Amino acid sequence: DFWIGRAIAQTTSQRAKRGLVTLSIAADLAVLGYFKYTNFFIEIARNLFGAGFLEFQNIFLPVGISFFLFQSLSYTIDIYRGTLKPIDRWGDYLFYLSFFPQLVAGPIERSSHLLQQLATPHKFNSEEAKSGLLLMLWGFFLKIVLADRIAIFVDWVYGDYHTFGGWYLIVATALFAIQIYCDFAGYSIIAMGAAQILGIRLMENFQSPYLAVSVADFWRRWHISLTSWFRDYLYIPLGGSRCSKWRKYMNKMIVFLVSGLWHGAKISFVVWGGLNGLYQIIGEILQPLRDKLVKLFRLNRNSIGHKAVHIIVTFVLIDFTWIFFRANSFSEALTILSQIIHVHNPWILFDGSLYNCGLNSKNFCFMLLCILLLFVTDYLKQKKICIREIVARQDAWCQVLIIAFSVVFILVFGIYGTSYDASKFIYFQF
Image (cartoon, rainbow, N blue to C red; front, side, top):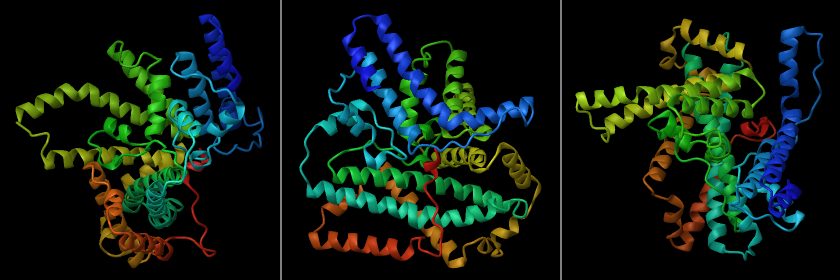
């Protein structure tokens, strides 16, 4: 891609440029396809032609391949579009691809944003370092204290879903929504903090997603680097919204199906992506009807009650799709849905049964308090109230106490140690 980028910039033939960028895309997707999807296609072939048709291959997935290949693709495509000039030194290009804080699980940086920062000399800045450290502490809280604590409950229930049906699975699925948010946002925030200590600003990957008032709004707030990548390099080239209504809907479905497949070589991931795309299409189709109902009943869309209903409905819709994301297979997801529908046990919410799923009563209640803290923080963030800026305005002794307290809090209440096999970051597998 480095050499193709230089060749695109040097040639004047538009046909040659198209050929070169096509070569770049084909080569990158071929590498990604081999390492990530070979066994997926073998499984499809075995289902169609019999188990003896092909043998599964023992292929190791290179670290961060889904992320650094997308960064590499954006480089050649941006040069082709004329929005970026190629860099001169191969070492600088490799540095851009392998910048360690965000290499393994993003955020997926754009070449135009990161290359310029990497090319600029940086001096140590104590204020930037302090802000980065606070970011990292918040990321560690989300991952070690909250996500890994929730994982104990979720893994316990999902690991024996034949026994834990009904409301056990409903609670576990709701908690998984929080777990994957804390797990992935935690990594992204740690990466942002580590980069900021080095003087580099990475793009923000999450913007209070569970305060979204629609599925479309959720995807403007969730995994922003990937969503915007697909928008700029797939959705818009397909025609985006500058085409007929049904073509626009098809473009959206293609993007979300591809997004599902990007997350993993399983049918369940494709279904997860398809459901999110379908939600948005149905939402757009029903928009005129919803506007008429709002006008008919004189509803105030800016009222707290109206927004709260939309937030809850959006969370329920998104949470339903997480079943397919969390399950090990599509058939397992269908079994879990059957267990949710056919088992009726609402009394477990009140009789203490939830405390027998890996977390005792104290840990379960502490988890709920941490979730409340998360939503309060997200609400303040949405209101443009930055806690780090508030901390930065305090006296030095107060800042030291806040940082020391945060470190001790994470060490005391974090889930880790030799007796516990700490959950790896969920997005490491992608």
